Amino acid sequence: MLYITQLIYVLEGKEAVFHQFEEMAIPIILKYNGRLTLRIRPEKASVIENTIEVPYEIHFVEFDTEQDFENFKKDEERKTFLHLKQESIKSSTLIQGIRLN
Image: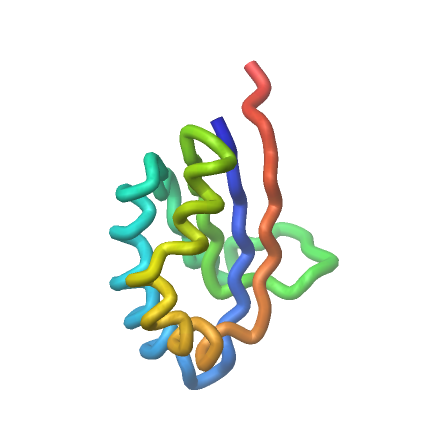
């Protein structure tokens, strides 16, 4: 299992474009044995301490295999609307992890 946490920083004023991108991209995750397990839009008031900018959204995603994730990134349908991502996202940080039991 591949676990991914993504911190997403959206350009000010481009939130609607980002939402449009997400509406199309999130369902494609399922095609590649992936699941969006948690999507958070943190409020600044909920942050107790930080040394980095508070992201617009935080996504927790899991894929059955790393190859499934690679196939998701190469999806032809997804490529047709990547311009929305490029237009709306200032930056993102992708963190790959493992589950500890």
